[in-house]
Amino acid sequence: MSRGRRRGGRDPYTCPNCGTKVKEPERTWTLVSPMPDRLGRITMTIMAAFRCPSCGKRWNAAIQKMKVGGEESGEKGKREKREGQVIEIDLSELDDVEPL
Ligand SMILES: [Zn+2]
Image (cartoon, rainbow, N blue to C red; front, side):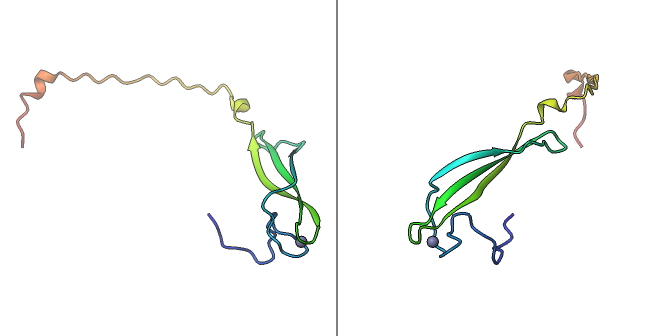
């Protein structure tokens, strides 16, 4: 599902000042959104603090987002009990069927 690179779209690992690619953030932490979405899930955002090794610029960027929870509370007591249909096949009868 990649749609090619957007021009001007910022890579969190790239220094906004000089464009140097940073391998690893100095530290990371997690932000949890206070409001669940309409499915009851909570968005967690992993933030990272970067420091450019070549120009010393510091910046923070979100490096990952994920949704958690919601599925457990999705139970609405909608339990349909389906009665299984039992089909009995008498194997001895099959032997009497003439092949076409
Ligand atoms: Zn830089």
